[in-house]
Length: 192
Image (cartoon, rainbow, N blue to C red; front, side):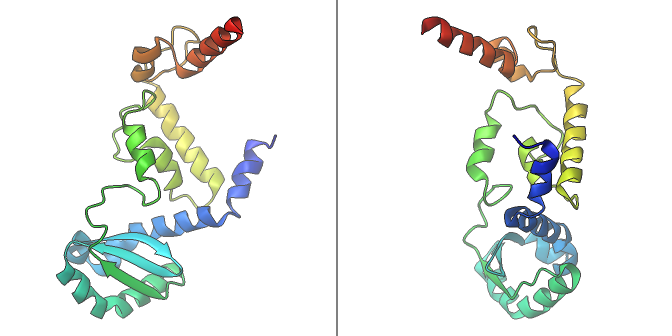
């Protein structure tokens, strides 16, 4: 078993973590780079093979932005040093409502999960951790943990272990998910 520090430290060296951080930085500065009017009609979708894919609200926007792509590319690379070599504009994913391109199914499952808490933000808890703007995994984890602690302050307590518990878990199992898992495990052993 690895310690939490070792696991989080290992994230620094994973390409997927770096890629998510870079993409999040790009999202944060997109409106400044292209302007508010263009940002309202475009949405960066992903960086693949050093090419930025951008969804546009119409084919007219896609066509016009093709002529501006070198200027946009230069501004992005000056600002973020991502090494992007091209930008592709398309209407193909404009109507996709996912929060992160690689997580749409997970987001849909999470919306109906009994452990979900209603948060003030539009980003689900797990996605917020993945999209953290913190410079390193330990800081991202600390930010996430701080957010989770503040959300837990107003949750009802589990009758089994007295821990803060989402209401969906109490409605479904009458206890938190950990106590429910222990109870289900006991039932399985008793039957065997």
